[in-house]
Length: 398
Image 1 (cartoon, one colour):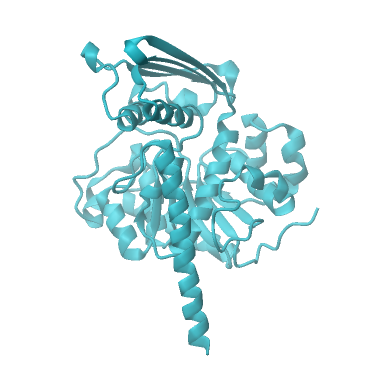
Image 2 (cartoon, rainbow, N blue to C red; image 1 turned 180 degrees about the vertical axis):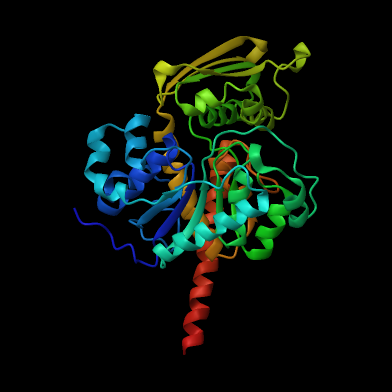
């Protein structure tokens, strides 16, 4: 096999926080496969034909951070997401991936940011012709309200990042001019960070990647709304046995994700499900079940009314692979970030709601139809801006 040239100016550099986790390690394998056999990965990307100015076989390099005391290769095997015959052909390449130790928890926020900023500069020096994107894949954290902070200096002096390490990575990336993909349910898109991102021309996308059950919930809820079928109740249960599932057994850590999964339904339908009962009849539960590993299973029971108020129901059973569903979205979002930054977009990108449970930014599209429509409009907008910039660059040379 022959790899694509990593010096290509179109190359992406994914800087992954949580690089050895189930999703991070799967992204590393998929990124490496794209350099050798892009036909194995590209068909799963929504950006394959959508984005302008990108080579369809765009090479992707991976670096990152992780506290796990093992090699990336060992982590790939231990996660059990991909069979050995999938990742083994790229073992030599994967062994070369640089994954550094995160900043010590004993450091304050400013010192953590400075250490990570130094790491970012050194990663860039390793791949000088690439376009970097930070991918946040850290575990769900305890929800905190950080909107009270009015400046970066106040944040540095008053906030202890021990319960939200994501913030250090996000700030470091923004200060370095690196776009951010927040695939976690952790709220890092606070006003102080957004202001810095806008000032520095850095796009941010998030929050909470929409991979399986919630993706189908958006599709079905949008379809029911379009037919004027009244949803009386929706019960969702999903079980998984990976580290993400184990982490979510802490109610404080699960609160943000459960909120994201719950609020989205009322937003789509335009009314609170269960209002006639005086209590919400939209219930979402997450269970940690070790035998499932990364092979997540989800059940949905949907009760709705049709003509004359006659009741009907839908039963949905999804047997998915959590990290296999997430990885193409991570690659898609990284590619979007490069194009958006080139097109001059900064701050939150609400048009990317298609990819997220809780999209940040003003007026994000809610229904599935609107999300797809806004995504296509965004691609056309970027194409026009980049074409105009190209013509201006050609004119300045003459």
